Image (cartoon, rainbow, N blue to C red; front, top):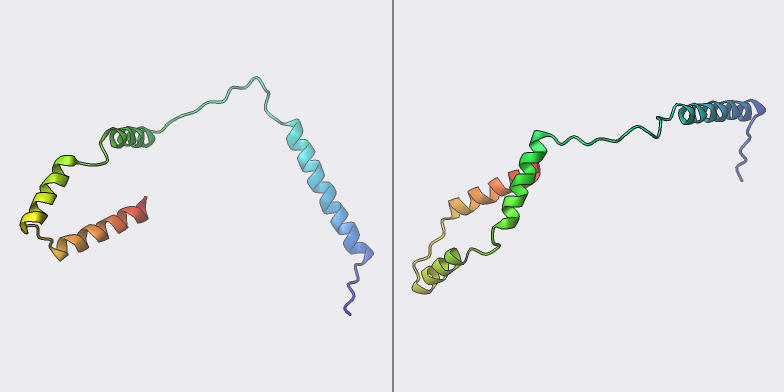
Length: 101
């Protein structure tokens, strides 16, 4: 069995630290800003642009019916072709965008 021995000086040092922290907390409470101060909010230009973009996205339909119909027709006639290079480029571009955002 291991015993932990705490000396008197260690206890005194801990009490000094605790008292010092307690004084700091009390000082912070005393220097608390007046309740009459008003909060303010400033929105950056970047945030405004992002907000407008989000609104534009929300207003666009989730499904582009014209595009869907065009693709259905191409698939049914056998004229739909996918280039693997384009798919790879779009996958990489999307991964980069996801990483940055």
